[in-house]
Length: 199
Image (spheres, one colour):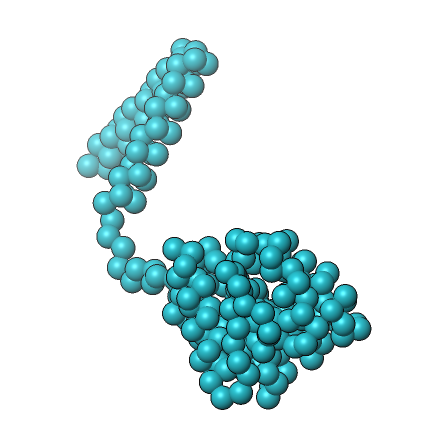
């Protein structure tokens, strides 16, 4: 029995050696192009396998929720204020709140620009011009010099709606809102009307 085992081990070793030599001979017989085709075939097979796994596996993650960002219409309402801007308790603050109320209903974009420096009609004109160059569709003005500048300029910009707080003039593209109680609601209504007229 002890002699039979070494004979089998030797035979198995010879078989493995012969198999190894045959594999080496086969690889030497292959040319570069054949090896490249074989490697390319293996790469394509692996890519197809990975693609199949990804396509047919189920994803248990919850879906991504919809964005919470508000979608705005293509209408801009801009406020021209005095140097204090929209300071709490000021008339401009009530106007700003009315504009925000209108924005919630109409989805119009709202912004404001304070006039800095000298508080005069002459100094307010360039700030008003900046709002008009930014393509503001509705321009609101609050404060003496700002309203006066808007009254002077409104006739030159027929496609822009002007809402003047406490102004003296009204026209085709100019509406007035009185100060005092109901200012916020009056501004909101005027902006909503101006935005609705554009649709």
